[in-house]
Image (cartoon, rainbow, N blue to C red; front, side):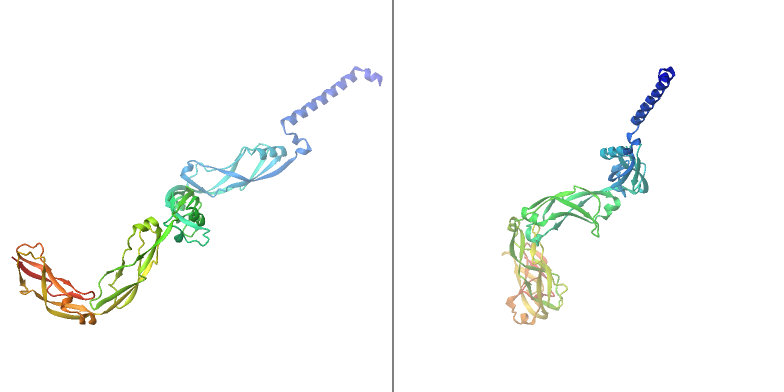
Length: 413
């Protein structure tokens, strides 16, 4: 043994062995440095992890000109690889998942979901990995906004507000595909009625857009909220109801009376507006279709700036009777507005008398005398010479007066 230890060959062999061992150790360290130590150590074995609800980005040229449908908001991303790389990737989230729609025009397309920014040491799986996409041209239109009251608590807006609540702005712009714009039927501001009734205003009422079937549409609304103000100082004032007749009764009928029921109506509105209103507009009672005594329902008109009227209609009770006709002969013709220094001569007829036909109820005609009617002509402003003057009739209500001689030929001198 001592001889071996003293042998130079023994020393050389041991030195060579140590050199090989040192080289091997350094090579292993270099390999571990250039790769994850997990490759060589049991604790760094390959594993899998899923990142859920990763936002999916859309890349498209001229984004302002198109609307994209069918792209999911998020996807699930499964990563496979070294634990340390997965942990770092999940923590930093410095990657993107995208659908590239550049160079695609309007229409339906199936597009791959791709990714960017992942380590090359990872295998990446995306679910879903394709998207069925519809690209449509973008359109914008303006629409008026109405109010949709919620949580009314039994309140009636007509009993709360002196006038219709005002929205600011009253119109909004809706952006979407042309097909969606064509579907817009209802635009509502969602307003809490008790809050508006108590405060007189609601700020930031959300706007919702619906189609004709009441389905909410997913479109871009600008602005998405509106402000609502209302006059809550409501009061009321009562007014009499009057009428005017339109149309003519059949000649065989005579109007006896028209009675309204009720005879008054109440307006609801602000104090200032009601103080400006002196009377209600008369209701129109149309006699043209009346063939017998009847009752008609007539609408009351609501003045501008007034919240409502109660009742909204009145009944007009119309009494008619069959007409009776008689004739008064030689009724004296009176002359109105003849100058004191002028004289009048009747030519046709030669005497200032005409026959007058009377149409009315039998009772009215039986109680009528000559003194109850007046027949006249008016010569005001007429110069010397011959001319025709229209006959004018005055008589009691419900009696129609006429004559076969509706014009009189006279001469003024």
